Length: 431
Image (cartoon, rainbow, N blue to C red):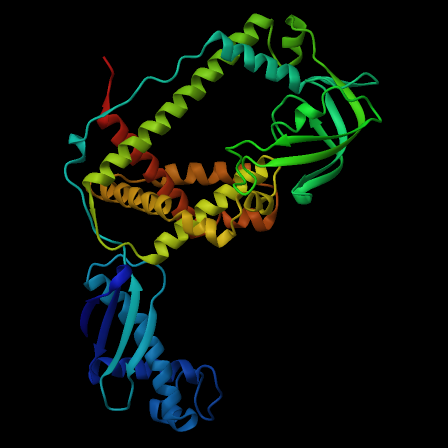
């Protein structure tokens, strides 16, 4: 077998592979055996008919095509191994020469994992800043958030004030034209929470149930919808209900209702502990970003295949969509607020996708050079944990039993180990 490699743009290569007449002959015999096992040939057991008999029955072209499929399936992996390549996805195969009595040749075009040249990464020095201190004010806010979460509502007839929940109909106009998403019926909102357009909420304060009001306000200059930023608007509002938010009394009984807390002091101590943990996690994540940004700057990369970048952009897009939905929003509304299509947002994600791809390539490079691996027991443990956390549905559970899922878990463990190895090696404790 003769193999030549031709580098192409965008991280792809062409593998040109040729088999001599003698090397191709076994695949003709295998093809004849396979075909004779699929069709009935008088006088021969399935799979046992001679090549010439099969050729006479199905034609030389059909026999050659089946032999070519078998040859490609065998020769392509051998060529990849011979050239020591790490390919991405499946190749695009073009048969170049297929004729009786001639060598067989084909071309396989496939993206390959780019090479990474990384100097001694242990020499990179990064200062990990201490995480932000948790203040009494932060703990107090966490307590108040819990009070709001466990609050009750009481409908009242007085005028609305900040802190109340109201139910309203509203219409918003700019230049006497209704804005997109600017009309709603029986809309529920909390006054003073900053959950709606600044300036709009203030106009509702003081309205009593059944009252209507028309007023003007200005969109903020830094409003996310650029076509509305800083522009004057007209609002029409009808208030249906005012609901006073009743917060639970702040005492030991309140703390006990939230779980196995013995007192309000114990609750505050637990909240402080949680806030400390969250602050440390944020600091660790930022340190990890700083570390890999520094490593990316010192590394040299081969051409990044388009397929890697496109896949990463899709992943980021899915993460954004998940975040929006987890907060109760709709992704289409999110796109509308940004005045972007899905494809436009995806295009803007290119720099972020490139950074993530490069970081992943560095992780792989270090894993290989430092012999970082995931043991069978480690993979098995995480597979079992993942299976236990999934819904009790056969089709969902079945996904965790595939080799692809095990490979995903294995890669995740290796990634985690490498990141921890790098962070520990590069951590420079502040004085």
